[in-house]
Amino acid sequence: MDVFQQLDRIEDLIVSSKHVPFSSSVMVSETEIFELLDEFRSSLPEELKQARWMVKEKQELMDETRKEADRIRDEAMQERSRLIEETEIIKAARAEAERMLEESQGQSREIRLEAEDYADERLANLEVTCYKLLEVIKRARERLQGTPEQTEEAQEFELE
Image (tube, one colour):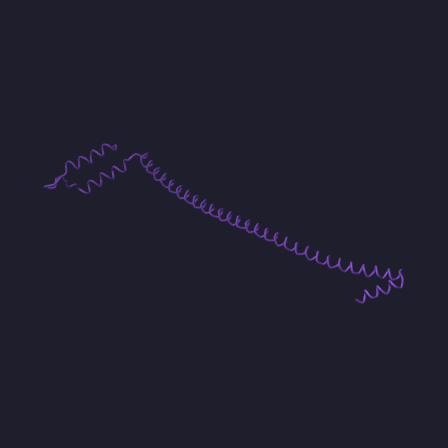
């Protein structure tokens, strides 16, 4: 018996059933309707059952695919956040390195200038000392080469 014949039998059962008074409802034998439905289910073509199974499988596959897509998207967002943080850390580190380099170059310049000033001061003192020493040497040589009068003058100068 094909599907349409079985549907016709269910329809005949409903039409031939007794009507409930004062309503459009009918009383159908529960046993008969269940028997007809069981027959109907068993006579459904195998292709329909396979199609139903395929639809179910397709839905499950779509659900799994959606879950996997959500998981991949979440991972990508986390990786993006991590990379952004890493980039910000690198930028901050570079800025700090540049600041430290500029600061150390400034300190180096300051130390070099102070060292040059100190060396200049020491050289100026040495120059004065050398000039005085040169004068003493010059006078001593003059004394050795000169007259006794010049020697007395040199001694007087030294005493002062």
